Image 1 (cartoon, rainbow, N blue to C red):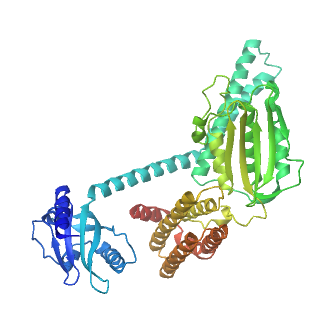
Image 2: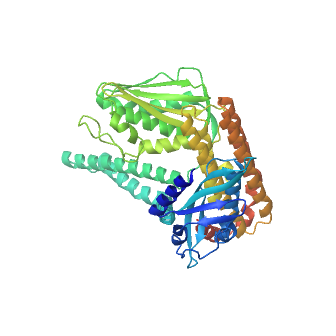
Image 3: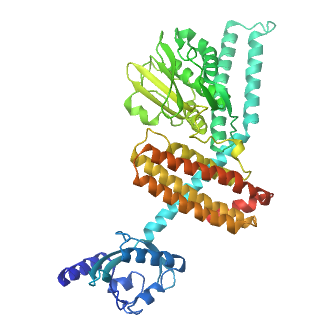
Length: 516
């Protein structure tokens, strides 16, 4: 960069208020433009123009990372230089800066001798980000409190509703009541409305249990054909009033064994079949089919001959209280929660759910659950819990993310995003677990912390190796490594913490609040 261009660059930076600097690497002398001083409340010349005086004003907790970023940039190991760090103002308060730099001169050996750059005040952006994170955390805590409250209210909500229905049915069927036709109609409306309300209560409670992580799965090897046949038999009468036929093309095929929770599997099937009847047209057909996928799952599809779903409704199909209300001929009954519950249950069982639809033709909703022979999944169950709610919640999140990584239908960009999310969640979990070990005075804390550091290093190396490759085998190798360390670490190391966490639930909660 010519002296004239450097002068223009400095003038431009001065105009927008960034702090411009010019660093002579060989002498450690740094020229700080007047704006560099003023953005932090100093007067020009308030501190000497050298690297040491500048670094003494960087927050101690950020200094080692800043030095590392500078060293990597100067050595050429990275082309991007944009660290964020805290800098001490003249009044001794701290502000956030973001650095940018360019090497403009080198010696004959190629080593940098002169660097020009700017530091930008990002304090307001960091504060806004922190406020957003705090608001998100508060919303998540409120949602969790709501879910835990509802999950604990199962008995209190269901018992009075069952009593209402029971007495209404007694009035209707007891020959001694001698109800008139009008009274009988009124009681029928009570029963119909009560059943609808009970369905809503059950769906809300299931949803709350899942969200509060109070839902336990009982995993066993089951014959999928038996469960499908039972679900079809239980659904056979749903379409009688509208002459809708349920056709089972699945159960007569060869048996396919699954490793799953049979009750929850049947619940999901019943919900899909019920929806297929509700949103079908009179005289329509509901058909069940199944096939194995190449990656070790069984796909069961439920197809209807209804009016189909408009493209504009696709994005919200699995959102809570989403119902198809655009056409007066489409059924309006239902809670609007069933598909949300079904999706969450299927994902809890390490499965997948989706749909295809065409307006005027009909819809196909499908679920995929892992075959009993599929070892490329981890299904979260009570057997994997260590007994500390906060740690178990983190482990459950990691297991869910891990299973999403092996979904062959996602593209490379989304896969990269999920891998990054898994790494970030792992780091966050390690921080929380270490805070719990601190407050519980766990004696092997330091050794456990070292294992976390080693695991993060290994994860980073394996991810880098996967990203350098392109094949499914590379992805499978990454998944196996992540699965093995996670499962082994949970069962071998994390289970040892629970003994020291007894009667310390409030201390643990407080330590994590302070951490966040």
